Image 1 (cartoon, rainbow, N blue to C red):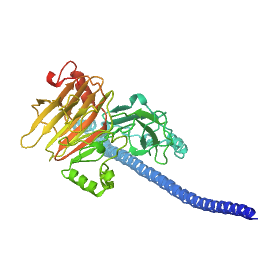
Image 2: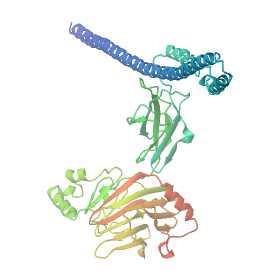
Image 3: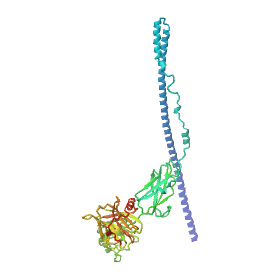
Image 4: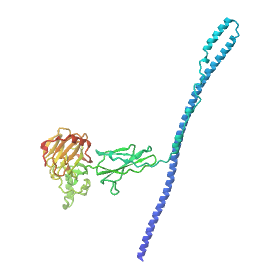
Length: 494
């Protein structure tokens, strides 16, 4: 009985859920009907506006053309009236001469007759009737101002609702990935003069090939693009690839998206290893800040915790520093080694990152090291680390360091430093990140993976990763072939 009751309850529950679904669907249908009515009314209103606009244009054209005809009519009538006035004057003069000639024929005196005949002859010779044209100056035809709307009528008769634009085609050969920018180029499969603008969408991914539904980031949208090319700039390449698609829009409706394409956007991405950084450093993913109270705060925290957990960070401290997967296998830097390393090693290829120091930063080093850098070691003072060092305390110095040997760099140090590492080519080069001016180059043979390294005293550093090797740096590298930017004393191989 209980089992049957439970079964019936499940059936009732299922039926109730289905009834709720039907009620919701009915509400959706009613709402859709209302939307269809509203949208249809809006479409008719827009149609009325379009035709009223067309009527207005035709009215303006008709008025302008009628005005042209009236002007032509006035010009012709004026010309004919002028000619008519001339003819009337000539006719009046001719009739006066005719009357005078008739009177002269009645003169009996030969002398007077001859004199009158000569006068009449002279006046006839100069008479206007013999100098005017007896052809109208203008034609009465107005056919040159007639219009033929046959072609336009056919065009109007062919007016239809705007079609849905076809999907554009992205031209992979014209797309470009360089300097953390992506230039996308596309074309329409056939010319469409009614295209108003294009919409470009992109999203980052680690999957090569077609976009995948699962584990994908949402599409980012760029709207109202008026050309068939667009450049996405200022990107951080923190994934291996980027999916792109584009669609065309006319005044009424957007078309289908193009087939998506995938472009490679690889770059070196790392964060700072907060779990092994010096206690006097406050570390976030890509930011380091000198904290003179860090060690003391940590000691106080340890005192409050259980002795068996003396090596662990407090929850508060853990929330301040960045992520820490696969780390913590090495001791924290200590003593005067105010150092933090990157969490990702360079094992091959060419990579680039940048560092910006705060204005109040007194001393800092930027470089690379093997994993064996000791907890008390400083960058550039071992045979397994290379760096450039800026000292802005009391007296400003700028130098390159390796194996505890220093080379002074007689150039101003920049606000931003670019680090270029060619692992396979055995080259570590530092640049002015703004001007791409060469600062220093180490040339050696790297025998172990390299970790980005940073040492700081007083102030803060911001690290920018996910950067491609800039085109300007690639160009400079080509011009540096065969040249050495550092002395042999700094090129000892570890």
